[in-house]
Amino acid sequence: MKPDPVRLAIAGAGGRMGRMLLAQAALRPGVRVASAFEAPDHDAVGADAASLAGMPGLAGVRVVDDAAQAISAAEVLIEFTLPAPSLEHLRVAADVGRGVVLGTTGFTAAQQEEIDRLAERIPLLQASNMSVGVTVLAEIVEEVARRLGAGFDIEVVETHHRHKRDAPSGTALTLARAAAIGRGANLESWAIHGRSGIVGERPDEQIGILALRGGDVVGDHTVAFYGTGERLELTHRAHSREAFASGALRAAEWLAGRAPGRYSIRDALHPA
Image 1 (tube, rainbow, N blue to C red):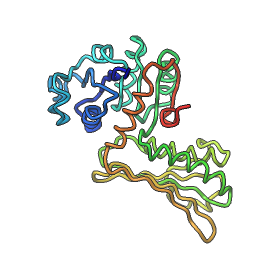
Image 2: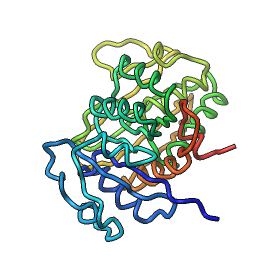
Image 3: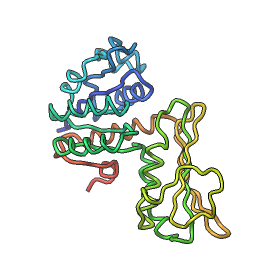
Image 4: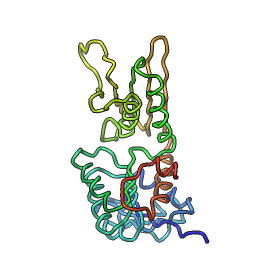
């Protein structure tokens, strides 16, 4: 017998990512949008989700401004908003025992510590990038860094649209951290964010991270390994938020019913 679709709550339903999640959820038989919500002063409050996403299959789901009500109506919350509201929504999810797929980036160290504590009460899958391609890229970057070794300098360059608020992107940090792991290093002590002035010779124990912002770029990430007489570049380009939405929905479907704890997008893509 086929299991019932996983009931989802979509946070930030009126935003670019929220609308994409609604549209993609309507096409995925393993999930069903049970609720959608926005900030109380958002124009989308009261709107029909079907009109927001352009998907008739969502008819009857209205965007509400009551996060607790929306989260309680679902099994899994998908959260791609901003750090402060995301943390508020996670607290609600923990109180009512709902799983969370968390794609928000830009959390402070203190906020992340609270997220880790909340994950002791609920199943929580957190990832800086939900796309299948980036997930695989991070695995490859770690292996390449390990195999090339100290003879290659590592630099990460990311480009996003002009509206993105945090820099560098969470994805850039994930890729840089994967490279650091491959080199047996700690990213916090190796990372350098841009260079200016007389910086001197580049040390071996360094990973450069550069953030570019402009236009409507969805997300480009390149990890470059510079050797002597050769260079290896690994690049991922997102042409649409559909890649992120598809991965998040796949993660939500996998997360439903899991035990409390921290999970990664790798867990959802490579289930045991």
